[in-house]
Length: 259
Ligand SMILES: Nc1ncnc2c1ncn2[C@@H]1O[C@H](COP(=O)(O)OP(=O)(O)O)[C@@H](O)[C@H]1O
Ligand SMILES: [Mg+2]
Image 1: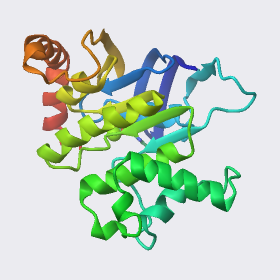
Image 2: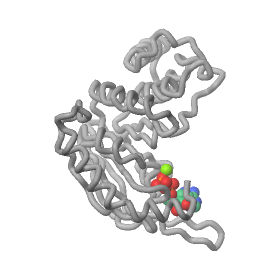
Image 3: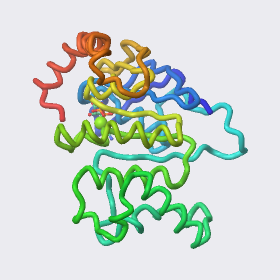
Image 4: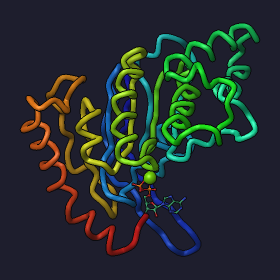
């Protein structure tokens, strides 16, 4: 299944203040493709992700899918930066959220939750509550919850940005391992260039004010082990190419104090 994002423009109006957030956004997420949107704060990454997820509508343009084998809207799994677990529910209950709505029996729900709990390596924590888990573990719960509905598309908005550098690196590896099991068409948002080069089949670089696509870069490296020393030159070349594109924008974002 393929997602097509066609001629998207997005304008926000707050009172008399009008912000043109996005202009002329065109790209596709191909079947089983991992697309990463990268750009400085405020360039419209989350806005694009939320539009693909149906949480926001574009001012003009359209987003649609091709090749869905069943006659229904695509189902979408989303992982946000703030994972938003229910603090009063266990890991198991949090992952089960949404499974009743898609019509699974109690028994199917338990099996489904067990499968995804194991996939993210939390079987021993299924009766723990969110406050008993590390930040990385909470994000794994969020990923398991998004995958458990077996979505057609996976959307992730800076899921690891609240983690320390070591946990982030480990979670990136972990995400590739998990992703490989399902190979969902994925849109992943980050402002971290290393993360983009590490994860992406293609990186979409956005410029800011208004957000436009500056470049779409295919990362021609094997999907796994890109941090291996034998790829270090190519890896750094990609990272440098992207950094040169967003450097000026990032400086401006910093000066304007965007979060
Ligand atoms: N709900 C909203 N109302 C008004 N302006 C918004 C809203 N959401 C985002 N914006 C503006 O749109 C631009 C893009 O925001 P966003 O998509 O959150 O950027 P990013 O995720 O890349 O940091 C910013 O200028 C932001 O202030
Ligand atoms: Mg954002």
